[in-house]
Image (cartoon, rainbow, N blue to C red; front, side, top):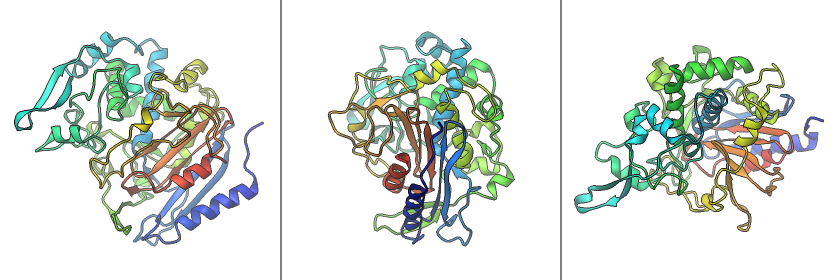
Length: 403
C-alpha cells in the first residue's frame, strides 16, 4: 500500500511552513515543499510566501529553483547507468585516470611553507569513481575549506564558473583515507562526458529526464522556466535579509555547455526522480527503468563503514556569506554510526523524525533538501533560495521528512 499523509499531519506542516514565511524580510520569503510516494503520487505539496522578499509575486508550485548540490544525485544516476553498461567501473582507478588525466596529476596538499607556498606531494593511490561518488577522493570546496580557499589566492577559485580549471586544485588527503565534501562528483560527471563523448546536459536529458517525462528541470532553463525563477537572498549576521544575484547566472542567459554546473528545477519535477528510486529504479508513472534494482540498492548502501563519524568532524564556514559553520551534518545519538551512499548521506538508523533506516538525503547550498525513505516508501523536497547555507529550513525539513 502506497504511503499517504493524514489530513491532520498535512495541516500541521502547512501551518509550520506558513508561519516561517509570515515575515518575508526577516524569516523565509517563500519556499515550496513536495512529498511523493513510491507510486509517484504527490501526497503533499505546498507553496508558501513570495518569490522574493521584495516581490509581490506569490511563490507557487511552478516556481523554479537553482538546486545546487541536489544536482549531485542526478549526476550519480548518470554515472551508475554507465557502470551498468560496462562503460565505467566503480573501482578501476586506471580507467578513471586515463579518461581524466586531471585526476592522475592531482597532488596532495600538505599545508603551506615559507611565504605561504603550498606544499604539494604526489599521491600514492589512484582515484576511482567510487571514491568520487563517496567524497573520499580528496577534493574540497573553497567555501567549506580554508586551505583550498587559501591555495586559490590571490585570484581565487570559483566553483560556479563552469571552468574545469576551477576544479583542478590539490587534494586534501590521500585518496580513500578520509571524507571531505567537495568537487568530487563534478569530476565523476566529467567521466560521464569522457566515456560517452556526449555533453552531460544532453546525456541527462536523453537518459533520465526524457524517460521520466521531466520537462521543467535543466542546466539551461527555458524562457518559461526563467519566468518562474525564485529570487535568491542573502541573510546577514544581524538576521535581516535582502535579495541578491544568483551565484550561477550565465546559464540563465547563455546556452554554453561549458557552463553546465548545477540544475534549475521545479521541486515537483525533482521528486519524480525520488519516486523512481523509491520504486527500485523504475518510474512508477512511465514504466521506464533508468537503473536496475541492485544498482539502487548499492546507491543506498553505506560506502564508508570505516568512517562512522565522518559527519561529526564539522565543516568550516570558510566563506561566511555562503555557509554557516556545520558542526554535525545530521545530529543523532553519538552511538549511532553515520553513513554515505553513492552521492548522498544515509540516516542508517531510524531517525528522530521517523525516517526509516538507510534513508538517503542531501541538500543544496541555498537551503534546499531532499530525502528518499525506501523503507517507508516516501520522499520529497523542500526548497528555498537563501544564503548562507545551514539553519534556514532544518525544522521544516525534519517535519516533512517524518511525515
